[in-house]
Image 1 (cartoon, rainbow, N blue to C red):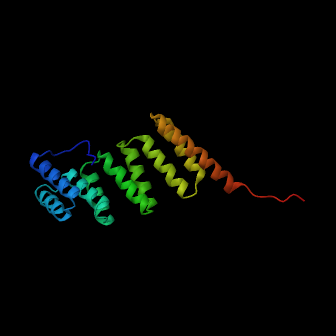
Image 2: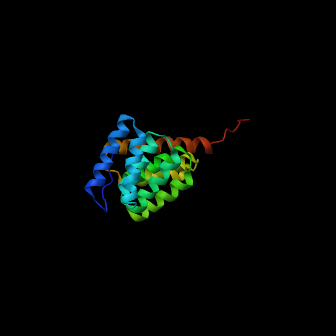
Image 3: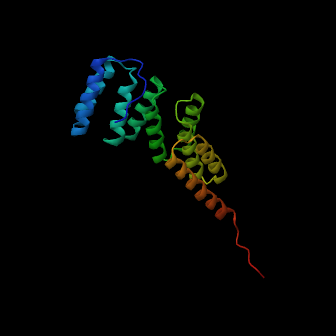
Length: 179
């Protein structure tokens, strides 16, 4: 499991409870894991990593999207620099087709500067492509390409641009009969 970069509060006992809860999740004992995490939340309700761990458990193991979204949001509320919470919340919202929420979350992250620009612009490009706004999608993919530092990611972004240009051409092209 990925960790948040910055924790405002760092308590060894809470970190130990989180590691015990993660072990319980991996062993399939979700009741024990949730009890441990909620007991720790009772002691420290503003600890972002606790909310992130609960969201991770609900998202990937218990498949409770409502609770996962809530705890991802709480994690970001208490620690807005937790980029993995942003990424996983965006993934979850995209899967649920809540595109307006994804757009507002990414705009907030872009303004705050908490995420990689290439991730933000690529996701906004995917979002625009899913909504059939191909011109905007190409614009975002190009912005992501300008911020990308990874060769494989750049190659994938070029393929996204090529695919989106083709889709734009196909939707704008009209068959005209020759008389």
